[in-house]
Image (cartoon, rainbow, N blue to C red):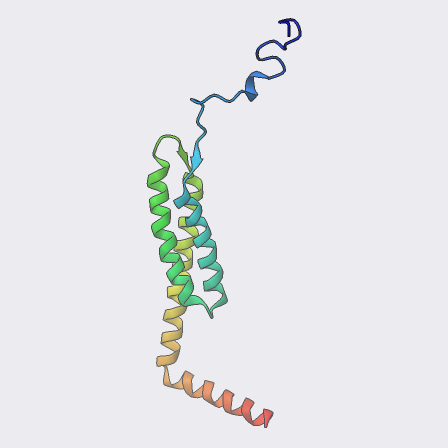
Length: 130
């Protein structure tokens, strides 16, 4: 082959598409991503009210991961500060709603009149079914 039939070095490759080994892209922190996932799952679980206990656990894990994600986002070459903050906010919100729900249920169960009214309603419904 002659030199004239070979393509010129770098021909057909734009400057922006070249891959350089020193060109490392910033990566989102895994802890930040998991904080957001746990925050969404915790909020969804708490809002179902049946899985509120699971939402509290997921929310606490999400808070821990959110704090770790914020600390990791300070490192050079690592992003995810906004994702961490989002996960942290959702997790805190889920924990607060879960604690409020638990306090409301506890107050209701400890109120004798409320429990008696609930038992009366259950008995009425049972009589209608039979």
